[in-house]
Structure formats: C-alpha cells, structure tokens
Image (cartoon, rainbow over all chains, first blue to last red; front, side):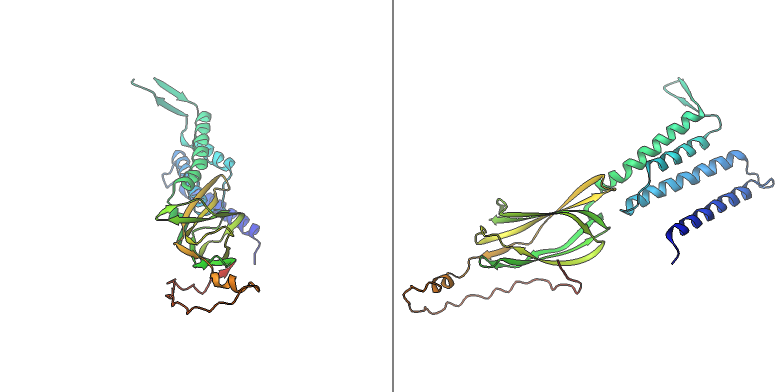
Length: 93
Length: 191
C-alpha cells in the first residue's frame, strides 16, 4: 500500500507537468494562441478548480480548504484577469 | 464616473471575493439544505410496556448521508388526546459519531419511576456538527405512540404474608395486543 503523502506528491507533480506541457502546446508559434489567451485560460482553470474545491467541501464533511488557499486562488485569478487592471464605470458617463 | 483599479488591487479584490464565497458557501449549505440531505429516519418506535418494567426496547432505523459528529437528546413525552405534556424524563448524549449509511439501532430505554400509565411518545433531537464545527444543525423526530400500562395489582397483594387469603376470582379474558411492528433488518446493532 503506497503511502498517502507519496500519492499526493506524485499527483501534484503529474498535474504540474500536465500544466507545463499544455501551456507549451498552446503557445507554440503556429497555433495562434497568444500570451493574453494563455493568461485567461489559466485564470479559467484556476477558477474551475476553486469551484470544485467548494463543491467537494460541501459534499464531503471531513474535507476542508484553508482560507489561505481561497485567497491565493482568488489573487491568482485576479492578477491574471487583466493586463492593466480594471476600469469600472459607476453611474452614468 | 470611471474608477481605474490597478492590477494589484484587482488581485486583492478577487482574493477577498473568493475568500468570502469559499467561507460562506459551506455554511449556507449546512444551514439551509433540506433535512433529507443529511439524515432520514425510516422508523422510530418503542415497545408497549408496563410500569413494572425498568426498561423497554426503542427502535430507530435511519440513514445518514455523511459521517457526522454531534449530540443526541431524547425525551419521554406524555400524550393526551393529541396534546403533548411535559416531558417525564430526558437524556442527553454528547460527542457521538453517526456513521454514514443505513442502520437499524435498538436500545434499552429506561422507564422512569414517575411514569404513569398512559400514551407516550419519544421526542428525539439529533444535532450534527457541520462544516468543521462551524455550524450546528438540529433534526427533530417524534416516535410512534406507545402505551405504558399499570402493572398487575394482584401481584403486589400476594406478596403480603399477613394477608388473609381470599378466593381467587376467575381471570377475566383480556384481549391479546400484538403490536404490528416491522421486523428488524439483519444489521440491527445493540447499543
């Protein structure tokens, strides 16, 4: 029986390598996938993972996600969300 | 009016939003989700008994949707013409763990000495600790009515050695009451 920590480490390594490989494939010169598209793709993936953790936290009583992890995911999505920040229109004009 | 939010501020804004949603969503689910998402009670009844007995058997067939810790409150409540009286006796058990799945549990519930003959029901409150003990939620159940009858008074009179023997009256035929109870499932466990 493999130790659970080893499974977690190997799983994280596999996901990391899949991310690196996927990013390399999507940003090759002849694909037409520029840096901006890559940033948005990563932001979407992180958002989906974050939503999944909330669903699992609701379904599985013993599973919990640290508030720090929620904050880090949000910060990553927010940082990748826009190139030059956001402009918000309040009211008319 | 245009408000330019710098990139770092956007990151902080999103982090705060994610933290709020991540913290509130499980609490909201625990507080407002239907009871059936946590526990279902299929059968809850107790055997008819007499005041001479010290205990009687209580049956509970329940399905818990997840493994939860919590507490349990049980009260013996008299019922008179559909009106609930003051609880005769109550018991509280803390630090229980409810295993996920369907279980039929039978246990010996004590008959209080001050319980008079009559119709009773058990009132059960099961409290779960949800969202890593951030919220406690109660689920309430009533058992089927059962009766406590007076013990045979002839038994008490025969115990007196100074009593003058009296002719024993012909026994009055009494109707046999056979409570119709569902049979216990094979996985019944005694607490």
